[in-house]
Length: 294
Ligand SMILES: O=C(O)CCC(=O)C(=O)O
Image 1 (cartoon, rainbow, N blue to C red):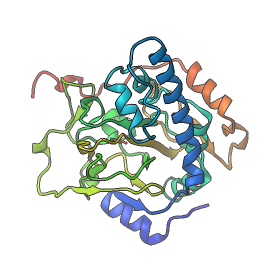
Image 2: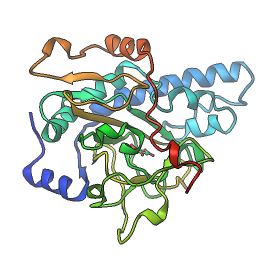
Image 3: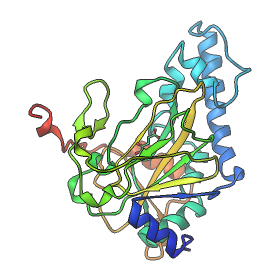
Image 4: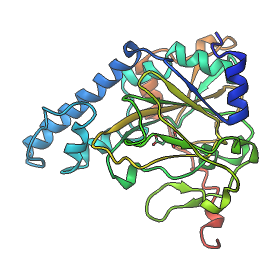
């Protein structure tokens, strides 16, 4: 079922982004928070037992505990960061009907959950979690530049200017794919500042329960986390299942379909198996030729 109004769809197409307030309830998000809390708790116990950290930091909340642990050991952070997590609550969120209804409004009723979903516990003042200006299309194969790959960005705590919410370049999704360079300091691709002319970026705080929609051509970055909080978020991506995902290192799955209902992935076990059994294909590497010249 499509849930976005015509005016929301118009704004999304016009600006390249859309904030959907109160799209999810705490019942939709709390199971995933609990899933991460359990991993963090188990990891802290293990590290403390191994003498790697000097406290389990049990008194800290979901929004601070991982930062305290990571000051002394990166192990737990590495476990949950990025697309490595395949827990049941994450699967339930990826296929949450409220998110699929939003996706259906923009990509149609045959919905592929794109392989590149990410979990981001964004740590205070931490370069590895500071994502520079890029378009998601920059990470995909060029044949997908014209496919709408919808990002739904979902904070698990209020994402604020202090703890590093996202900033976007409005309207710039109409200008095709910008030049990206590999940042030598980290593994991220980055659009050089001089590529943007006459565009004013917009910082978008997103409250718990609200979600931010982006196109794969919308330039965006996350701003520095100058708070003491871990700005936990998930970014999931959806597209027309008939079109290529342009990303072979990980596996996507059919999330909703009228044409092929038997191929829709409906259980967390199946999701986990698909992720784990996937034989990674080559990464797009579309910017390799630019690495040495400009
Ligand atoms: O959450 C972040 O800090 C960055 C998210 C991002 O760049 C993305 O979803 O493509």
